[in-house]
Image (tube, rainbow, N blue to C red; front, top):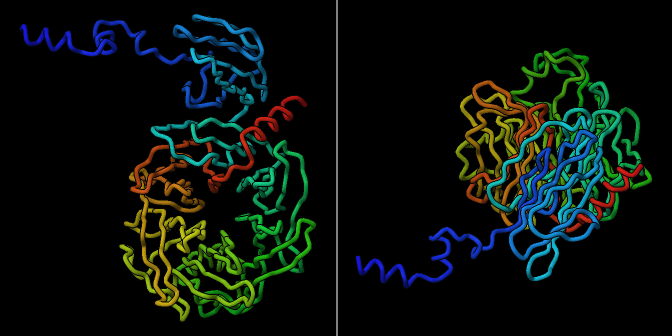
Length: 480
């Protein structure tokens, strides 16, 4: 007993204080709570929050340890715990400032969600998600969630927008869709002001909504539908059929066409392979390729085609196909190495992207393949040896299948952000899920969208647009 007493008395004073019930020595952080509740819950490491104020005031409660003071907006600082009401309405925001014993203030931003803002839930277990993640949600909304799970920016369109993408110049792009018909690409300011519309140029082409990228020279690259006549009798169709093929276009901000590339006949109808028995019952024009993404690195582009089960690297100067990965084997096909799915690795894949080191990433839906799980994958390409080696694969036990949509990106830190598309388990479709994974495939950030399935999750890793630009744009919108 005497030995225990000696050890107890030898404990540091700080730990003794905790053991004896005096928590003030471990000076707890201040907290801010609101009614209705903040989303996400308050943390000193999280600067932005949302609240469903329903166009009415909220109650803000400060819990301030000794030495801390707090205030709302530009009011006077107050010590101790206090409660105050804050008038609020849709889109408007207020600030809460906390100042600690060292005198350095910390500012937190709280914004009211519109009354019809879609349902969502975010679970974050550790840092590492992209700075911003953009998704399209139900009721014509596009939303940017920050790394802590707060919706910090949103825009409601008059039609159904898809594929929202923020660009470093302080604009964002969407595809405006109405009644399941592809309409146009739109470039807008962060306040939602329409800057320009983009349409494919030329005869017999219409917009394809699947992807829009802004190039380093300020031009835009996107896809178009191009119908061509073709005899499909060898595939079980009529002789005088029409095919829906892809054309990739680069246009200037003014809409002038500066470059184009046709997938057909460079990619032959035989490469549709197993999909012929699916697309013929769908009717004409037969969707033989179903292009869904384009990425550019230098003189080359990477294009993905769902109904070829393959991605292609193309030399934009010559139009030549450099290599093919996946799908029906051709003279351009790479040899697949280290992949558990073998020589035919993909099933209706999406979102193929170049990585700075020359590797490539994509999300492999494994659509209509039994006993194959959807996955996000990364391959190392050796063009000299004509090989593609699987170097990373991310799966999630929540998803046993993925019918379509979906995306996968890798950030500078090696973490992944994956949108699983129209996916589920045991035949159930739970809405949409976007999740971040560390390099070992462990999830640490999830956005659940129960009312809809986002087409793609587009991350923002760079410094622009800044959070200050985003807050200012939201303030200007709310002031109208």
